[in-house]
Amino acid sequence: MFIVGLQGSPRRKGNTSHLLSLCMAEAARAGGLTHTVEVDKGHILPCKEYLVCDKKGYCPIEDDMKHEIYALLRRADIVLMASPVFFYNVTAQLKALIDRCQTFWARKYRLKLRDPGAGARKGAMLAVAATRGKNLFEAIDLTAKYFFDALDATYEGSLTYRDVEHAKDMATHPTVTADVKEFMARILKPFIGRKRILFACRENACRSQMAGAYAKALAADRLEVLTGGSEPAKTVNPEMLNAMAEDGIDLYFRTPQSIETAMQEAMPELVITMGCGESCPFIPGAKRIDWDLPDPAGKSPEFMRQTRDEIKKRVVKLIAEL
Image (cartoon, rainbow, N blue to C red):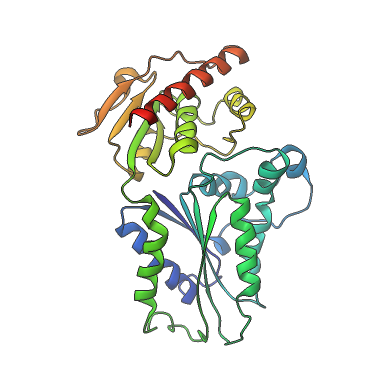
């Protein structure tokens, strides 16, 4: 499982960062691969309301959202968002990231596309406040609720603390360690014990991406799905994106990766190869099945559709057998 933390405080080692670090450490202890985004340190521009996302499903702004963060959020099984309370909401830096996720909202509600991770992905909010007001976290909770809906993530609620004013308050908080253990155990529970499966092809730009998407869409509650390539391409195949979109599956933000990188997330129990041949590595303890599927790259859109349909049929059969 892959866990992304969005650290929204401008203080890299403050109370918010400490709380998020405790949660990420619990995820790592449970076997998860974690990645923290220091939002304030990145190059994230605010939404310019160009409306390109509503019409075409992508944001034209060139910054870290386009080149890194959209892909991380799509890849994540769990997203943890953390912020101090600024005027009853999250920091401006984190709010800019949230606003730019209108792109996800548009793809989901305007273009009617479904992310393969929808239904399995989880999201949670971490927040600390210096004061004790009764309604301190109401606006943050609403912001988080609709942000995670756009991400196709089930909102698992929040872990919040009042009266956190001094630099080391969270580090010395009497209940935070126990709170985090209980909070994270609940969020992580659905991801523990799933069968790990790797779909591998040569470029990780087409066949393995399609197979992984269908496996995730149909059985993410039972399968931890990985994809990789023996010689990964720079981008996914655009004809593949079109073919999958025709079936309602959104792979726009997927990025090819190597088989070795995929296995950093988890060691697979089952490997399905399709075209990487002898260059696919031997993985001790993993069963290997080869799907002899021709590479549809460079062929007609109809051939791509036929490959898509054949992969979907094989994935359905595989899930039934597992």
